[in-house]
Amino acid sequence: MTIDTGITLGAAARATAQAWIDEHRDELSAWHSRIWELAEPAWREYESAAWYVRTLRSLGFEVEEGSAGMPTAFSASWSNGDGPVLLTYAEYDAVPGNNQAASTAPAPRDGLSAYAPGHTDPHSALGISTLAGLLATQHAMREHGIPGTLRYTGEPAEKMHGSKVVHGLRGYYDGVDAIVSFHPFYMLPLCNTARWDTQCGAYYSKVYTFSCDEAETWQLENDPNSPIPASHSAARAPGANAALTTMYTASRAMQDAMLPSVGGWSLSDAILLDGQATADNLPTRVARIQFSWRTPNIEMAEHVLAVLDRNAVHAAAMAHCTLEERWVARSRPGRTNHVLAEVLYRNLEVVGAPTYGQEAVQVANDILATLGVEPQEHPFLDECERLIEPQEAERLLREHMPAWQRNWTSDDYVEMTHYAPTVRFYVSRPALKPTPGRGAYPAWVMNALGGIPATIDPTIATAGATIAGTFLDLLTSPELLAAAKAEFDERTAADPMPPLLDADFEAPVDLPWPDYSIRRDRAAGEGSRHW
Image (cartoon, rainbow, N blue to C red; front, side, top):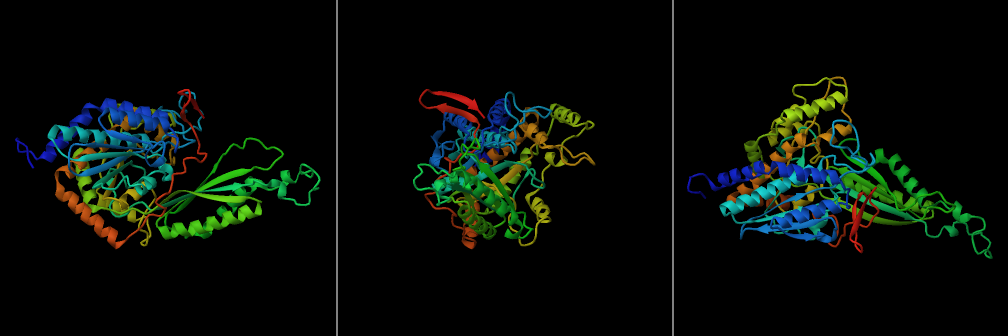
């Protein structure tokens, strides 16, 4: 297809999309700062989700709030007529205990505890980058009369693989022709590139709840005529905390025996507080512990699950408790799509890697000064400002992995890859060059760089333009989508992997997740910020 000037429609549309992003950089920067400052944790991203819903509706999208039964999820759609259906998504959850101001020194955001949540990856930039690409595509479709449908989902609780499994089970990715998944760079060599063969692996997460509802029956020799346990047997019952600590110590003691020491697998845990605030003269009635484990494949994940389940049963029995188990997530390793990876990387080549101007360099050197390091003419990691072809990134990644290992790390985009052809790509987030002899910089450095406009805005502009260019290529070149679909079908047939959770699985939004948010009082219409 061509336009009167002889320029291909796709190229003209890409230029229009790029111009839109250039014209809206200040607005995109302000949007990012808003989400970054909200910094709401998993399943509690009330204001962040509401901001996206309001913004999308104001720009012509039809939006379903609370999609798939998740209060902080959404699903948006905009159509310009019959044509391909393309999807990308926002994430916006922050991480408790990582509160850092957008400043060049270690400090929490004003008025907040240092242990409040903060954006680490940062998902704030992830969401605004994909939104930029979405809106630039919408603008170009209108300007050039390109038919098709854009879908955009709000995906809460990514750190726990929380929403994409549920959206997939509920059909929100059905009928989609292609999906673009973006994440700010987080490990070399995956910087300014697309994943090739090695996708993310399996991720399991489960909450074990121990309840001590009949502590008075721990010692049955109490005087039957006493209206209360006169021997204070209830106080001496082990209780839920004893079950939790037994579960924790047993599982950690057996960690080395769960799986081989190779393969890049990990096991993490968190204790969820459910109102226990004091040591009274009664045992704790309820205690919850969450385990999350990342493995290269499902078989390894199942080995860990068997050990944890067994430990939980015996810990409950030892401590006079009942046991309840709740899945948080159970996701499959990802499927690759070379066709989409090539299309996207060609667009990333056209856009180019992020570059950092003098203001960003000054920010970096101010941080180095805080750390007692001499200023540098080029303080940013060299890889942040250059591209790496997907095949070369794949080769370097494989150098660190055993030959049998097919997948590396984990992220819940993998669930999307089982519903439609999907490409996963990365654009650099700002990172400083290491100082010889110093070791790694403290975590607050990268967190701060992810919130300072001069350093994070190049990531948003680059990723947004890359997404828009990729979408417009797919909308105007049906042969690309056909090839991507054929590859998807071939890979699915060769290695079928059904969902790991039941179709009626519900997200565990009701569990006592760490909360820091602006919550709405439904009766009074008022809110209060708290930690």
